[in-house]
Length: 198
Figure 1: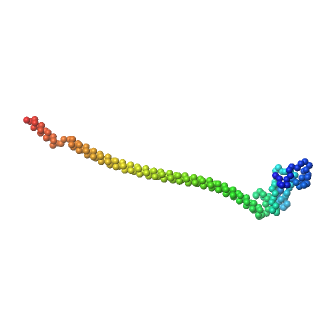
Figure 2: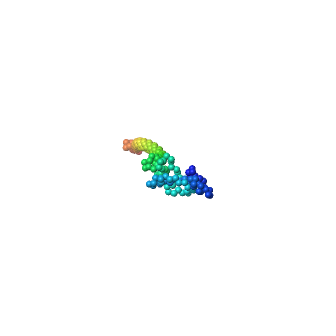
C-alpha cells in the first residue's frame, strides 16, 4: 500500500535517484511507549514496497492537526500522545458508540422476534380459550339434554306404571266376569232337578 508520494517500481539504475530525490513508498513508524519523543512518529520513505509491515509500522498518515501523534492499538488509528487527549477520548467514545449501536440493532432484532413469538403465543392462547369456551357450552348443553332425557324417562316410567295398574285392574275385572258365582250355580242345579224329577 502506498501514499500519494508513491512511485511505480523504479527502473534499473534509477534506484539511487529515487532515494536521493526522496521518492518511493512512505511509511509511518510509531512507538508510543518510547521515552524518546522522536520515536512517537517517524516518517520513513523506502524505494520499494514492503510486502508485510513490521511492528509499529503503518501506512496511514497521521492527521496534521495532531501535535504529537502516536498509534493507538485500541482505536487502531492515530491519536494525540496524551492520556487525557480529546482525540483519543473521542475516537474511543466513537468506537464504543458504534459497538453499542450494533448491539442495540441486534437487540432490536431479538425483540422483534420475541414480539412475534409473543403474538403467536397470544393467538394460540385465545384459540385455546375459545375452544374451551365452546367445549364448556357443549358440555352444558349435553348435561341439560341428558337431564331432560332422564326426566322424560321418569315420565315414561310413570306412564308405564299407570298402564300396568290399569292392565292389572282390567285383568282383575275380566277375571271377575268370566268366573261363575255361587249364586248362579245352584239355580242351574235346581232347574235340572225340576226337570228330572217329573
